[in-house]
Image (cartoon, rainbow, N blue to C red):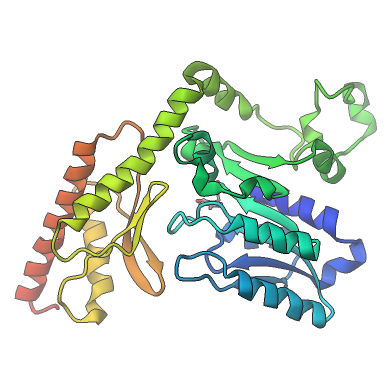
Length: 333
Ligand SMILES: Cc1ncc(COP(=O)(O)O)c(C=O)c1O
């Protein structure tokens, strides 16, 4: 809902009605699927979305982005939106927002930051520099049900001016006239988002801030960074493990990579993941990056201890070698 709301603002503030059919939005190969879904809900065809290739660090390639925009303009299209990633789902990569903002300014495009997961690093004083340039975006989505420890769903969208929201979402009707907004201090939330009747989702977050205070939240977020770093240094001391994407904002990707035929590696890693769940060790699920199937740790529970994280890594190592020895005995690999 947060990303959808942001996309609607971009559409309404950057496009005339008659421009919508030739409009183009720029995302990347690592942009979360909810953005394409949101653009689809808003009536855009998949051919109106460019998935710009990412560089080796999984950031949107800014030179490629610039040339895609120029190319579309030359074809008579109307570029209107760049979506930057403030923490990708796969690797927690942050795009180069200073460069994205410069392109957006030059080309008069809307710049949205998807910080569903990563924006929480802004509340961690010692780590927030990782999101440098995010303040230049036109709007930011941020899920409190991810790294602000709330129950589902508590998505937020931050915009530069509140009237951006009312211009897109404001409605009036005779049956709501008695509850018309009387001033900035008492907003009618139905005019700030897609829903009319809605739960008070923000209350739980407000209570958490009041009860815990910013310092405790800062420490809890920092713990996510630390746990992934602990996992990484433990893996670095073990045989046959590779770090495909180092610890970044609580996420680390690490395939098991023993000397077996390359064609078997996906299966081996899939089996380790399944076996970790079956053995109630951890939900170390898989993802695929640059074609490679990898194990992924997303370590944002602030109560997990270093010892527990080390036990998970050692447990994965044991399961991996157990599978390897059984599979080679049975001639499967
Ligand atoms: C970067 C990013 N954006 C958007 C989303 C979608 O968030 P939700 O599942 O709350 O709709 C996710 C979910 O994992 C995400 O990681």
